[in-house]
Picture 1: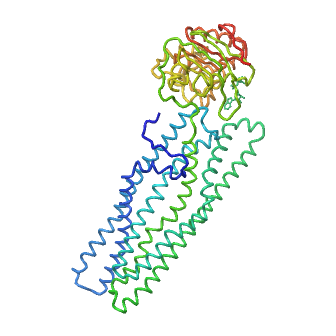
Picture 2: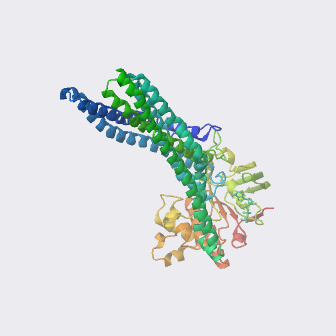
Picture 3: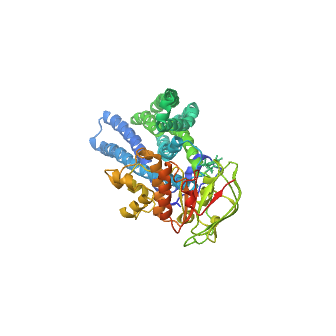
Length: 555
Ligand SMILES: Nc1ncnc2c1ncn2[C@@H]1O[C@H](COP(=O)(O)OP(=O)(O)OP(=O)(O)O)[C@@H](O)[C@H]1O
């Protein structure tokens, strides 16, 4: 289960709203970041306004003392702008990364809970893209959407109030221009790029999936002459992402142009309002410069809003893909009050067992079988008859109807993690990690000594092969076992199960890739090492099976 506190998302909400509870976990840091952002942009406005006043006043050559406060103000605002911006960046990124790490852990946790049968059927590269890039993209919600909008709106409001006190009519000019720049311009930008922003995350997922397929299947694709077609497909994926990025960039450029037009227009409008006010004596002359520069300074508060609107579209696309993983249904939920784990040598009893894969047809249709404690049973049957499915049920990865008892305990009454302390499973194609032989086997029992690992490897007949390797136990197996044969890879998986010492052992065709003579020897060794444990051995071929206690045929 999760090691961190993660908010429970309410299903049915929009994907972006589903992220808000995660943001709320960092609300104090985010509030501080908004305040610092306000002070940073506010210092910029203060700097320009004070400078304008200072320059205008200095032109009238007053006694220097009357300018002292403004001179200090210019310095303070100048320094404050940089210092506050730096502090805002530190605090906001700290908060965003904390949220991000919680969200990523929640996604991992979900995948760990629902795996393997409940992992959504995305292509591998696409799932990777969701875990990495899409989770990363959600940091834009606090950094590029929430903060610019919140601190920008505060500064805009403060500037309008300042303008009001200098000349009420100027506040209206400023308010209209800022309102247009913070609502209409972002809306235009977001509308122009909406489709592109929504489509960019799935397009990246497709590219990633295609790259992985090409890399994984490079040899087969090259031999079958299909590689050029896949390269063309990648090029098309790439062009599609390029087109989407160009549409976003065009929208962003359009927003910048409109923003410049608006701020320029506001300066002209300010002049039109302020000059008559100076003539009529309503406005002190030196404040004219302040009012004219105010829209330019305040523009910094709204300049990020179109970008924020575009970022929101992007976040929406990515959040949707992250939420889909978070919503993946656990096919075998843990019971509310789990039963005690059975101890000692455990038998397995199936009574009317029915099981299927999620959204697939029923594979096991009422299987009954009694395996006594310590008995070793071969499970045979035609391809697709459900042998591996039976093992997946026994390992607690698939839900079932009927009854499955481990010792005296019904399997569905146990926690999944408890089931797997009793039952060890070596699948047909065990995963090997790109590390040494010893580390690949030791992951089943991290505290095992080299001698224990070696004994397990001997029991699966890998002793002579290891003796011939210059690096022995430290021999590397390569990426996906590229440096070992299929039979060796299979036996590394079996050695893992042997080492872990589960009372019930499920082996899915452990001698599948071996020649007949080797298969007989390995099977005999293996059965010796498994003495005293209950074994269900799925087999296609008869090698070694004769030495088991009995054979059960699936219909
Ligand atoms: N991970 C899975 N997701 C969905 N369906 C699956 C999955 N694994 C197997 N199936 C389906 O379950 C059925 C039984 O498959 P299973 O692998 O249990 O048969 P098997 O007897 O072990 O076959 P084989 O001898 O060829 O390994 C098949 O129709 C298959 O399509």
